[in-house]
Amino acid sequence: RDVRISGEILRAGANWNATVRISNDARPIVASSTELSDLLRRLAISTLRIVHPIKLAEYYHATRNTSALMDVVENIIRTGASKSDLVWAYNFWGLVLSDENKYEEAISKYAKAAELDPEAASVHINLGNALHNWGNTFREGGQLSEKYLQAGLQFEKASKINPKLAATYLNWGTLLQDQKKYSEAEEKYRKAFVDPGFKGHAANGLALVLEDQNKISEAIEVYEEAIRTTPGLTIPYVNLAQLLSRQGRYKEGYAKLEEAARIDPQAFEVYWAWGLM
Image (cartoon, rainbow, N blue to C red; front, top):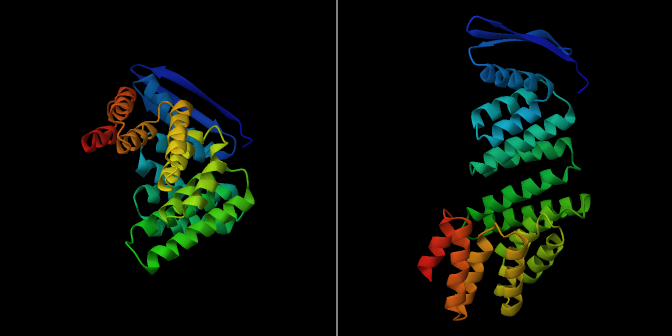
């Protein structure tokens, strides 16, 4: 946004007093505090609320302040922001609801974002994930199959909008894996695998579906590749350890769990797998 910001900070006794003026808002921001750092933080938040509310919402999301985040998101929608801001707001609202496992509500927000911008590939990915996760809440039958089908259609749309977006294929692979369509899942994971930013997670998913197809030696190689690519990710160590133990290679399996425990001593899945082995 093309704005000009001016103002002053003055000290009066024990207090710091500030006035900030923003060119596209007639009301000045006025704040006071006994701590300069607190004053600056409050000024930054108030300024971002006017100049760049999306950045403010991202800050609240990073600091896990959901109530403040939703206040910003709802204000963007309420004040009739630009279309791109509205798409962002509905999409982010959907993410918050998905994090709370409120998938049906999340889907309605993603659908609104997709209605505003049908070419937003990330919205279709998020919508596909919400449908997939909602489907997982049904044990069997028509509801599960229908949600999975709808999720697949969203990933397909995303792939047509941007054929090179690795996130599409990573999430699509996970859906197909849950559907036990292992060869199709393998194909999607391999497409995500070429992107360095997704290689570790894609390699882990790929190894799992290779294992499901009894391609054991290839699965071990891919788990090792996941570990080399993203050494801070513990789940490939855990999955490889369990696979090695199933092959009777217990010593090697325990060694992988020990490595994972050194990387993240708080990783629950490491000790859970240790107990099972």
